Length: 193
Image 1 (spheres, helix red, strand yellow):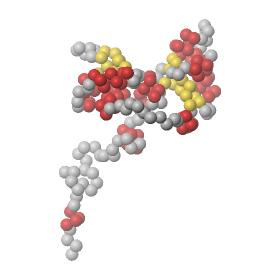
Image 2 (cartoon, rainbow, N blue to C red; image 1 turned 180 degrees about the horizontal axis):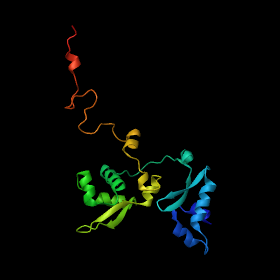
Image 3 (cartoon, rainbow, N blue to C red; image 1 turned 90 degrees about the vertical axis):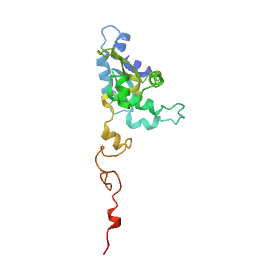
Image 4 (spheres, rainbow, N blue to C red; image 1 turned 45 degrees about the horizontal axis):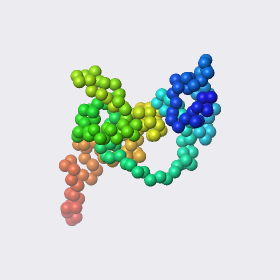
């Protein structure tokens, strides 16, 4: 029954939801673990997404399911930066997002990310004014194939994937440049005698 529910569901299903659909006394958590073992090494696998479970195509066979589509809506740079800050610093307030970005965050950016169901409201901070916090959602984790936000790549992985520039930290001169960031041209003017 757990297998049928996970197979038919388009979205991940929590153990509590599984237990609610099962006959009295059935243990959905145990059934999920049995299914994980049964599908190990096969074309599909039972994966944990946040606090829920789903059946997904095995990662090594994902290329078979790719479909080329035209993306009708791209995130703005502000939305991407805001999403990254929420993902890496959650739970985070709007003021903290603005402090990290160095510019104010428009309400439209937050609304767009909430409309996509990639961020949600978190708990209010226990500080003056009790500001609301933002967190990534289960849909965000599912879209990017993550079990939880701790699985997000670190700086080294992002640089290795070519998503960040391979620049040294500020203050360290780049090879071939002097300490002012200008190219070292002394060898061009050396006397060849």
